Amino acid sequence: MVDNSENPGLRHALFIPKQRIYRKAGERNMEQNVVLEMRDITKNFTGVRALSHVDFTLRKGEIHALMGENGAGKSTLIKVLTGVHEFESGSIRMEGDDKAIINHSPQEAQDNGISTVYQEVNLCPNLTVAENLFIGREPRKFGMIDWKQMNERSRALLESLDIHVPPTQMLDECSVAIQQMIAIARAVDMKCRVLILDEPTSSLDDDEVEKLFVLMRRLRDEGVGIIFVTHFLEQVYAVCDRITVLRNGELVGEYETKDLPRVMLVAKMMGKDFDDLADIKGEHKGKGAGAVEPVIETVGLAHKGTIKPFNITINKGEVIGLTGLLGSGRSELVRAIYGADRADAGVLKVKGKEVKINSPLDAMKLGMAYLPEDRKAEGIIADLSVRENIIIALQAKRGMFRPLSKKEMEEAADKYIELLQIKTASRETPIKSLSGGNQQKVILGRWLLTNPEYLILDEPTRGIDIGTKTEIQKLVLDLADQGMAVTFISSEVEEMLRTCSRMAVLRDGEKVGELNEQELSQGNIMKAIAGGDDK
Image 1 (tube, rainbow, N blue to C red):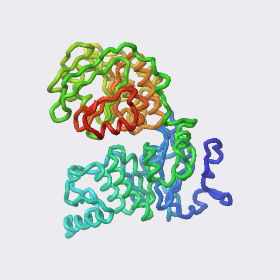
Image 2 (image 1 turned 90 degrees about the horizontal axis):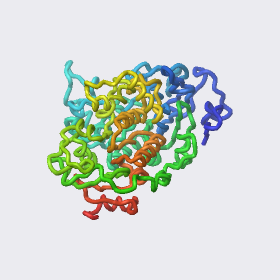
Image 3 (image 1 turned 30 degrees about the horizontal axis):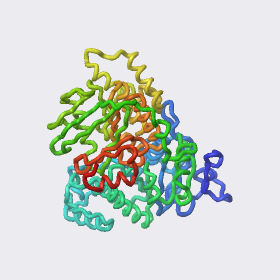
Image 4 (image 1 turned 135 degrees about the horizontal axis):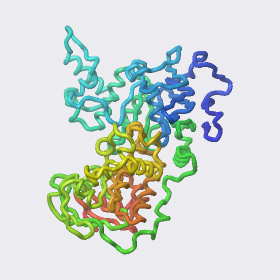
């Protein structure tokens, strides 16, 4: 195992035998069994160095994790490789090519044997499985698409990869996991030598993840080199052979998974000693608001078809978690409170006063804020700047006849960029150019600017790095200390235990119990989720 985190001079010597001396890219042969070699890659954006002299090596028949915090350079490295971005210096070589290659587009990368499957499946939901597999390269007979041959070839391809779905089925009728596998099957059929999987498991449940892993292992055994970009540590250790860590656009090191304990991986990603299971609640205990003071109370609140009648009280200065399996009704419960799904039964009280919420704007005016689960679809406005994304909720709350001045907007944006340590070139940078974690911070800043009394956070740390996760968790506890009532939803039980003072348990669209702080443990939560109505 080689680590250059303490000695940058080792960067270019990672996993290279001492007797070999590298000269110019064209003057050497690639290491045996290597399918992809990136050397000394540097990429700059306006005001930001995204990659600085980064090396990356992928071998045939391995699953290689690319790890790092948001903003570490993972996405940029992938985009440089696949021709989305040009790079200033360095070289990219593929097995079998005499010279270094430069991909000018994803299509050119694909022609060179490099295929990418993204978190959001880039296929056509209105077409069949077979049509998606062969789109742009349909078999033809007498100038017409040979539907019979296309379906037969699709069936054979799917069977060879153990993907159980009819070729004639519409893609939008398939689960997200199956759609991911179909995207992979398409890449495999196009003879890819390098398969990039960019956060492919973020929307999958455990069973679907395991099915995807089975397919990944099969492709690895067939000699395909797989780059696996993920934030899930447990998945890295379940399926990956090797790990490359980036930090702040620089290479930290390349490691064999079996030789790198989890806590060491976290330390290398963070650049310091860090225990991802640390008790961050300890310093906050006893600092709450004191006497119990309800901010939100519901009696029999419900929305037909999504959430059954529920009773819940959320107090000033506490973080209450909502836990349950995927589809249990966690998001639906808070959407009913916030008016994103208008409640059709029951009573809602805000600070002891019965209210009617017909829309999210009504909720905002009552001092509520809601950070949704899907930040891309419901959170960020991609083409607007960081500044515009931060101030938009406050402006909506004030109304069109009380516009914020330019100075007010700039001061608000600068305040939360600094407070939340948002990594951006400037307040006018388009939010779509920020990393996922920094986008999430912008949305959080948007809602904090409205000075809410009740904050709903639905999966606020999904798809972001460990460091940013911890920052958000600590911020949540700080807000509770200041008297804010917070509802926190997360699929990660450990994160809930570190953050929440009380938990409500949901199952099949129904609240089935609560756990107080003394009862909070992983075992008790699992029992409550799996068991009957208790407490």
